Image 1: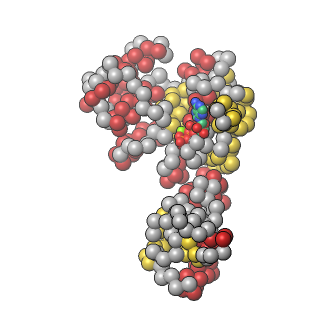
Image 2: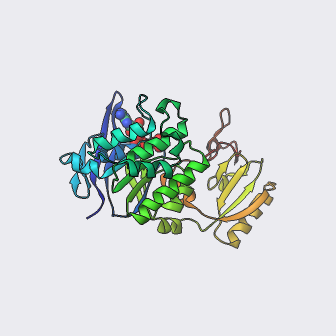
Image 3: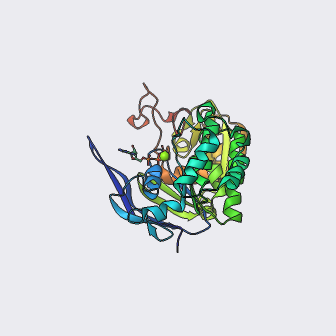
Amino acid sequence: MPAVSFQQVSKTYPTPRGDLHALQSVSFDIEEGEFFGLLGPNGAGKTTLISVLAGLARASSGRVLVHGSDVQSDYATARRRLGVVPQELVFDPFFNVREALRIQSGYFGMQRNDAWIDELLDGLGLADKATANMRQLSGGMKRRVLIAQALVHKPSVIVLDEPTAGVDVELRQTLWQFVSDLNKSRGSTVLLTTHYLEEAEALCGRIAMLKQGRVVALESTSALLARAASNVLRFKTDAALPIDLAVQARITGRVVQLPANDALAVERILARLREVGVSPEDIEIRKADLEDVFLDLTGTGGRPGPVPLPGETPPDAGAADTVTGVGARNA
Ligand SMILES: Nc1ncnc2c1ncn2[C@@H]1O[C@H](COP(=O)(O)OP(=O)(O)OP(=O)(O)O)[C@@H](O)[C@H]1O
Ligand SMILES: [Mg+2]
C-alpha cells in the first residue's frame, strides 16, 4: 500500500476573473520509505496539493489516501500519520519552545513525550532554546520549531513545504541530516518541496514536477537527469548574443549557459560567437543538472525566445537580430 496516494485530485478556486484551476487531475503514489520531491515554479500548485493532503483544503474532486486512509472521510487516522511543516511561519507566541512541543504532543494524545522532544531539540540545534519564548526566536529558529512540531508525534509520513526557504547553510545541513536519518533509520516517507534544485537532486529518489496544476514529469531523479542535455557550456559576456544562440541559452546577468552535448556542439557555439564578434570569458563545461531539466519541463524562463527589454524593438519586428544578456532567459 502506498504511503500517499493522490487520485485525480483537482482544486478550483473561484476568483472574480473566473475559476482558477490550481490542481488539475493530479495522480501519483508515493511509496513507503521514499524520499520524494515535489517541484514546480511559483503558483504551480505545490502548497495546494499539500494542503489537500493535510486536510487543510478540500479537493474539488478526486481523493487523497494516507496509508489507505482517506484524508476527508478518515481525517483523524490520516492526519496522525502525517507530520506537516507548512510553508508559512505560523506559531503561538504565548509559549516557550518546550511547551509548544508538549502541547502539540497532547493534540495527538501523547502524554509523556519528553525523551523524543529532547531528541528533536538536539537534532535540530534547539537544545539551548527550549525555554525561550517563541517571540524571542529568530526566523530560522522559528522554522526549526515548526519542523520539531511536525515531527513531535512521530509521523510515518513527513511533509516539508519549502523548509529551507530563507534559512542559513547550517540549518539546511542540520535539517537534511536529521530528515535523511529519519528516512533511512526509521523508514519515514518524506515529501519535500523546494526551489533549491541541487537539494532535490541530492536528496530525492523520485520527483514529480508540477506546472499550472498539472504533473509534467514523474520519474526517478536519475531518469530525469538522463533526459537533460548531458553537458552545458558556460561562459560570461557583456555582449549581445545572436538570436539562434539566445533562444537556447539560460542567461543570468553576464552568465550564459547553453546545452552542448559533445565537442562538436562546443566548437559550433564558439565558432558562431567568433563570427558575430563576441568573445566569451571564463569558459567552462559542466554536467547538466536538475535545474536544466526543470527549466526545460516547466518552461519557467524556458525557451520562450528572446524577450525585448523595455524600450527595445522586439526582435521579430525585424529590426534587431541580437538580444542582450539580461532579461533574455531566467534573469
Ligand atoms: N486560497 C486561495 N484562493 C485563491 N487562489 C489560491 C488560493 N491558494 C492558492 N491559490 C492559487 O492557486 C495557485 C497555486 O498556488 P500554490 O500556493 O499551491 O502554489 P505553489 O506551487 O505552492 O507556489 P510557491 O512556489 O510560490 O509556494 C496559485 O495561482 C495561487 O494564486
Ligand atoms: Mg507553496
